[in-house]
Length: 334
Image 1 (cartoon, one colour):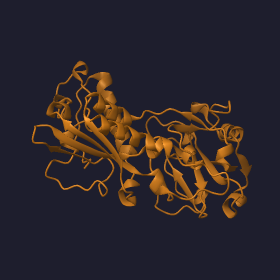
Image 2: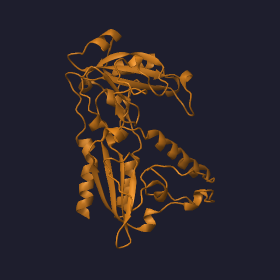
Image 3: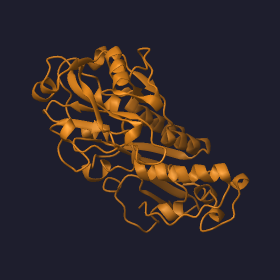
Image 4: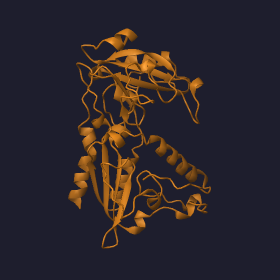
């Protein structure tokens, strides 16, 4: 079993070892398969009690209290195997399955084999600024964080963002230059702001968003932990960032810039790695754990499951904080 665990650990580290190299010359190639690659996480010989660890009483109007809450270990981002995962008789191809798909099958000794499909680290642990700079850091890139120009979250402005990216090493260019040319060194990025006045959803705060111009002359983007894409919210190829329909209420255009990622100062903000944390919990129970990259399937691997995950996490955190009953309709995660 030690050999299996070591191999799995190596595979988990591959996204770190094989991070994309920021090009010193020329615009980056559009490589959605690399940024959006999904992985299959498998645990073997899982005891039945561990597989179903959770609180059945807290669903369907149960009476579980905060003190009785036990965090489920399966799925990695979920709450109940039987409700969310495919059963033993289902025929499932992980490559064709959508993100978040999971399945459990019994073994002859009474244990179970379990697998789950989730986005890779490049997708989950990179945001729009990392993607715009064609750089993987294993954390969310923050303008100004490495240059002594920290952003003020609650009062973020275009002027503040511009000061931060210029301090990082970007060079401002005109809209005409960014849309109609390609630089000999580096590439162009477009920067937007969501001001507080544009917020139209709960817990909304000011935020930035970046797009990058690829070697094919079109633009692409990555919103938070969502998949990278070369299309806007209406499914249209992005030829002009300001003409594109952007999700997230990024209503203020803050400028265009030329960046040379290899020369940029790129600071980061750590983000929770729930997948790796969950896999480590599997290993702590001495389970046989395997992690393998899957062949890229653009139809499902580029789908945005971040919103579903965020809603689910909010429900779970609310339960942990208050201990109230959690009334949850059956969610079709499969």
